[in-house]
Image 1 (tube, helix red, strand yellow):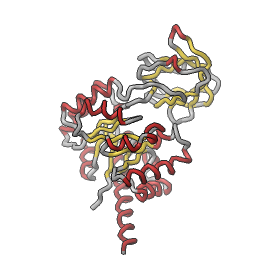
Image 2 (tube, rainbow, N blue to C red):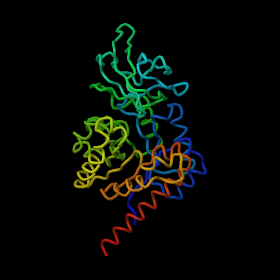
Image 3 (cartoon, rainbow, N blue to C red):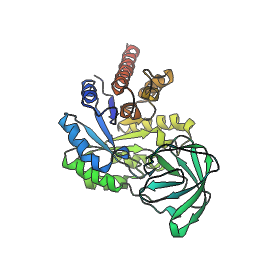
Image 4 (cartoon, helix red, strand yellow):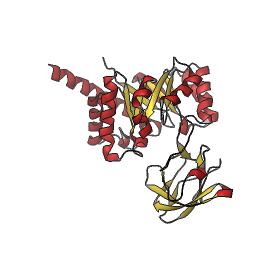
Length: 333
């Protein structure tokens, strides 16, 4: 019997009744609502819609202690050496001023600090601060695209709440509708999880996402307060060089297997299938290697949220899991 879980992220490609029914038929284990891409006024309606369609094991994935860009009217290309403002105001970002969410002490960011936006190479450096207007004036170091709700990594220590206001609203709403699964983004310590449990109760299933150096540093304590842990390789690559991500993944899974704590793995598993019918050989090998290391769950993100065929992605993962389990039996014999 297969015990490997498949977690699907819901989005425009997978919210239709037809796709949801097919995902149910494929026995998807957990259906993830990503709050980073779900407006607050849609959270309750999404939950009710999924329940109406008999979707079980709904998981609320928080925004957490991460800075993001606000909405953009369109996708902007920012060229090297362009001067641009950064603010912390609740309004749309554009090619002259990037606004960041949630609220934090923007002026604590020092001159010459490097700021990374998204994963398309956009990189800025702080030139100066305008105190009375609460602005940073920055220069583009590397060309890249500015888009809505992209993660922002600022290379300095910032104090951020483990939950945004939207997260708190979502946790309360989810509890009212008897949701038990919660993925907590950017967990830095077990203290963050104590705050989460104050909203959702001690019996809820907490999946702590490993996305920062602090999470790895405090892994043992975080695991004690978690039902499972999820390695988000995308955001983790902001803290660990990309060539070290496979090693970090292997070591984290090895440690968690020793203490009998399930590990799930996310990011780029079947990235090619967002637009293509089949994955690459490298992606297939990545899935196999992840299973061989002992991961107990595989997470599909953009593949099922915005991809061309969410169901095909799930079917391919199931084939991979079947072949992996079959290979184990061959070795035993």
